[in-house]
Amino acid sequence: MTLIKSWIGKNRHDKIHDDFKDDAAYFQSINILWRSKDWPALTKITDRDISRRVDRAEIAFIIAIAHAEMDAQDGYKLFSDIAFKWGLTAGSMKKLIGENYKKNFCSKFRANVVGSIQIGVGWATNTINTAIYRHHGILTIGNYQYTAFYESESVLMLVRLSTNSFEFHKLQGQYRLHDAHNSISLGHDRDHCLHVTYDHHGTKLRYRRSLKPYAIDAWGEEKAMTGNYEDRVTYPTFINPRLGHPLTLLYRDGESDKGCARLKTFDEKLGVWGDHPVPVLSGENNSPWTCNAYWNHPAIDEHGVLHLSFVWRTHSIGPEQIVNNLNICYAKSADNGLTWQTSGGVDYRSPITPVNSEVIFAVPPGSNLINQCSMALDSKGFAHIAFYANDKAGIPQYFHLWLTDAGWNVRQVSNRKVPFQLKGIGTLPVPISRPEILLDKDDNVHILFRGDISKNRLSAYSASAPNYLGHPDDFEILWPVDVGYAEPIIDRTRWNKDNILTLFVQPTNQPNGDIRTDATVSPINIINVKLTQHTG
Image (cartoon, rainbow, N blue to C red):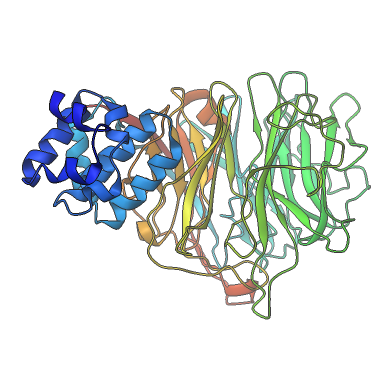
């Protein structure tokens, strides 16, 4: 070890590394540096130094880890890419970790299903029941879990679950189910009454409130909230009460490339909703090109601060109508959306627009950046975002984007090989779902997805805090069923309370562009999963 350490940085690298003619001896020397945690020495090695070595992929992986330990994210990304390019396999990576780096690199996570129950059979012609932007698609209030789904074009089913049992209530009506945007979202107020919105895509708000706390069998009539800005509603997102803040609704008013995000709040004493005075996000008045913001799942920290991350959508590109989402942006509010700040605490002028929004990760036009993914917070209140977009080779990959005291970091967490293009109008049959993200009580990150790399099974990629290193091919299957085009639907309240992952699982189809097809149904299961960490 002393010999190598004295050589590195002293003489020309082409001479240094030629002195180790034997590949096995060279790899052993690299291992000595690794085991002794001599990160500075390892980070001085270049790809040129190792390019002709038999174990070059494994050595590049070790160097990537050294860069991560030095908080050199660019170096980590460079050598990770080189390792995979040179043929690093999941088996080789696991062997290296198992032999040399169990405690310092990452720990394996296991997914164990600890409970499941089939709650019915629902509409499966498209992803209307399994779209990730349902907020909430399933949630906990007190000792009960609640969910809802469309059974048919005339039945909206509400379900209340308790330990090992469930009950349901049917809301009869006429529902437009051939457009997957028209999903159901649930919330609750401080009186523990359930609120539900459903069946809109740029159309009039449809909304009801339960008449009794915790109940699903008594409902008020369908009605407006305030009647203001409610004729072009899409993506209603309930933000449940916390730390003095009331139930809040975030929704889009407008169209995909010309809209704004508005907030309403509910007063339990008066039984009425109120409108925030100005939009939160707005692109409808931009000139010459209008646009619209698509937000990820909002997140709330322990102080009640509301965190938003979002992309901007403008006009589609070319005759193929390529989806044109731009940049990932961020804002936070300590007063439930009245005023907003950047991640650095700089005040925004409202509404936030593409001109003044903080870009935390720049994404150019035509990069397959997907809208409406997910965000969660760690124990310090720092945001973690999961999304997908093209890698340098033009292949869509999952990414983990997160904030630390030193700034924003990004890491690719998938290793897909097949390209695709987001193009056309309406809901698309995409080979990978939008990702969901969670952080456990130890700040480990878990990214949930469905796609071609998991044979369409719901899966979880996990990585340990604080460096969040992991192999893109190393993920756990959560439920061993092909779920078609379904996306992960989770109970955030249950996760934050118990670190139990509850998922709404239904295999669903998705016609291209929401074209009308014959109606189909499939079973719906609620499953509970424990994600446990193994260090040995």
